[in-house]
Image (cartoon, rainbow over all chains, first blue to last red; front, side):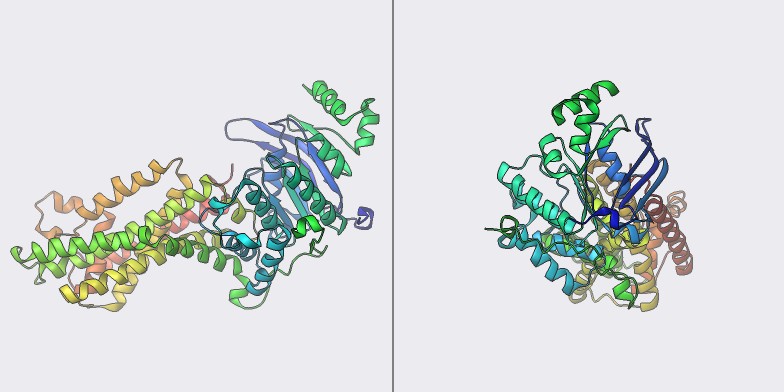
Length: 249
Length: 279
């Protein structure tokens, strides 16, 4: 694993991040958080806690109301920051008109990859994610598990330094979940910073060096799984979660 | 066994991927090329629906109204009726294709949320706007060229002023491709996108002089026709083909240029601010 102490520039810095939607709902309220480079960072919280809003803000998919977001030191809106992020969203948002290979090639193009390089990388991704046999298959004809794998392959296509996975194992079978865990863990071991949101506490405990608990757009606590258990004086991460959420309700 | 199971990652290196920052124009705008390619690819994959259907329906108008009924209608401004209607029908097919293609493509991308893949990328807002617009423009050009080629043997439609024709076609593509993108961004349902097509563009095309010269209308319908933007588009294209127009071709081109500027400004504002595209 890459020790994050060697890179003084954090992968992600949020300062006073605020997001109020047009209907008045305050999803994030002056949110501060730093994810060091090389970290495997988990974000836990109930539905509506602000996890997806936070990710969308980092990826420039929503208009923030206030605050600052920096990706490896760059303002999150500039191209230099955006090319460093890979995002696999919670919903399967794949283009229904194109096939597996085209999905990867177009993505590579959007991120400025040369055609030959993108083709090589797409072949690698399809091999890694067991999609080679489906290269010419259009998205609507893929199974749910294949779509999920393609979504993650697309996020990795342009070789991002910060990989953001929003509930990547939601709705996938146990075998694929273990495969994905193994792959993501190895990616992290080779230097990629990973920001993971999940509802599976065992997944967060299994994978993450550090876990942040959020609710109502506010950070409740952050530490390693052991640190959180100690902080809350309980035996399991589930107990930490219940106690933290109850205290914040 | 997949590489996913076997443990091979070909994992990302800590350094970022080689992204184009300098080099040739094409290298600096790979995102734009990819997005435009995706839009054109969509048009070609759905060719029966996007290309063939509008060509068949417009060519039927030429056959039925021009050849069948045309012999019973006297020449308009010295032009045989079957020839007179060709530029208007080509224009109508073109603007409808440019609009409907882009409104449906952008709305679908928003509805299925795969537009996020583009919005999260390092592409500049104008590149996204232009890339999304080009699919409709290419579709409209393919339809227009095919219609003219089909119409030639049966009507011998001439090209009077190629410069005016190219300029008029280019401006009409800008106007209606951009309008399609704008409506695709604003639309909350498929009905919204088709409403503009069915209730605005099609009626204005018919009332803009596709099948007749507006000069033949009694007052006040003649004056009312002059506030219809499609009247100027059809007349500019007709002048390019036939050299006849109900109004000065330079006035038509001026109105079209002003409309094109408004559409470009509007769509650019949407993409640069993220309004309606980003919550």
